[in-house]
Image (cartoon, rainbow, N blue to C red; front, side, top):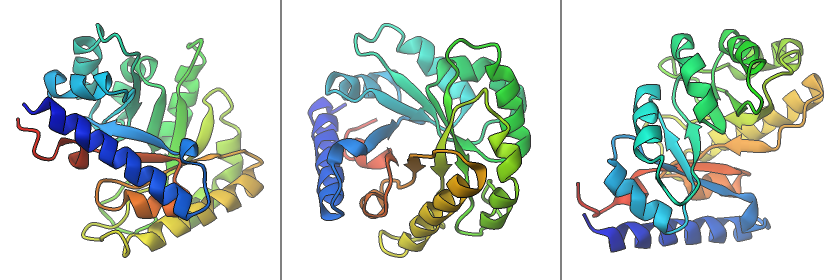
Length: 233
């Protein structure tokens, strides 16, 4: 395991985020890096924490549960994010562990989480997933459907809904992903108006396109492989 390389990668990604923010006239402090740690061991994650990363993202609830326990002794406080699909039967155990759920992908799931939030003193925030690429394999509302559900979404007041989330189409690169990010921003603006909600967060951008996402307004970028390049197993 190359600890120095992991920490160099983190600094590089942070620098690229800052540069992209400045190119678009934004303060780099308005963009948060969520380090995606799926399928990475606790030993590989600790160097990120030691270097100052505190927002960690997991795709699968079971893996999040394991790492939540394995890293409970971390001197650096961890803000856990669930960034993958959440099945309703895993929600009750998961939501007390996380600060943000990025992929609330249906009104049914949103209502379920809203009900569960009633029992929590400090429920996690949520981003609603929009399928801006139009791919059948992806979860999430269509751009039209989420606006149609605006009133029902606004009625879910126990769970803090803070923004929207998307993934660009498979096979896109930094530039061909851009339309998906532009569409998410436009849907966010329309939903704010229609639902009467303030939705400051845009969760978009991964290792191959996060700089473009930042240029288009991302406030949360989900980066994994770029942080672990050449770091060993």
